[in-house]
Structures are given as C-alpha cells and as structure tokens.
Image (tube, rainbow, N blue to C red; front, side, top):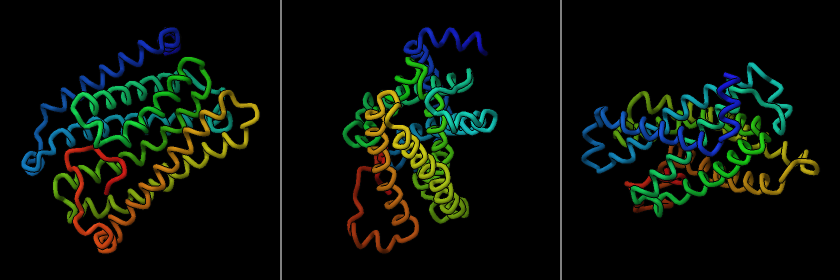
Length: 257
C-alpha cells in the first residue's frame, strides 16, 4: 500500500478524479437495483439513488476512519501532521465521493434546492484537497470522517421516509440510534476539531481558513440537529410551526426534516 500511496501523493488531483469516477460507476450499478414502488410514484427516484450512493460512502469511510484512529491513536493528538498510508488513501476516496456528489446535484438540476449540500461539499472538498496537496491535516480529515458513522443512520432515516416506512419498527429503532450517533460521532467530532483548532490556532497553518470552515459547518449541524429533534420527537409542535409542511420533495435537502 505504501508504494501505491506514494504514487497517489504525486498526483492528488488526478487521484480524486479517479475516485469520483469510481463513485459514479457505483451510482450506475445501483441503478440496476429495484426501487420501491412508492418512491417511483412520488417521483423520488433520483433522491433514492443519490442517497444509496451516499450510504455506500458512509459505510466505507466511517468504518475506515474509526479503524485508522483505533490502530493509530496518535492521529487524535496530532491532527496537523500525523497520518498513515491508509489515512491518505481514505481522504482521497472520500474527496472523490464529494466531487461526484456535488457534480450529480448540479448536473441533474438540483443545485438550487440543495444549496446547503453544495456549501457543505465545497468546504469539505477545499479542506480535503488542501490536506492532500500539502500532506497537512490528513489526520484531521480522517477524524472528521467520524461523522460518516452518523451519516449511515441519517441516510437510513431518509430512505425509510421516502419508502413511507415511518411507522415501521426499523424507523423507530433508527430514530433513537440516529440521535445517539449524532451526538457521539457528529457533534462530538465537530466540537473536538473546533477545540483543536482554537487551542493550537497560533501555530497552525492557515488556521483562520479551517476555523472559519468549522464554524460554518458547526452552525449547519446544530440547526439540523434542532430540526431533527423537532421532526422525530416533537412532530405536533413542528407542524404547528409549519402548518402546510411544504418543501421540494425532489431535492436532497440538508436542513429539512
């Protein structure tokens, strides 16, 4: 693996494009799988397939991110400089996914409805590409991918909603598991990254850029957490705030219920 990664390090841009094409191929392969009838009837096919690719990414990168930190715990204490060959490869793979997903949103005409995702993806791609080119903050990028553990339950929640399975036992179990992973893997990860940048701000390379990026993403995840709680645990109160409950069902929204 070291020999492979040494080649990837010399061509990070091309490597990211290759992995973007790999995820596009996964997207094509997933199109061969059947889509629930109710999803087709409600014209949610694009969203279903887009979320399916996102689920593959989350299962892969979330697992590998946790593995990297467990095997090499120094990653947590040295987010700035420490990384391994697997860590670098993981960031390449994940960046490729975000490039592919951003392209899918734009090219299929969902950019306006999914602007929150495009902002998020732009920030992630900028930070990850900086890491790949400079070999700095690779450990930070790997730790940031801990949020993908929570993304698994978030994507499952949305897939079940698209299938009109909100009353199923799986949805009810996932509802609580989703909150647990949101706190332990998303909020905790974001807050640790923010603390690390603030605590070491005086000597970190381009600390202002990373701090600003983290603050924007922190605001987004806190808003989404609030709306997630309202939608899943206080639905009556949520409907009283939004009596018509309308939004674009064809979009892949980040700050929707």
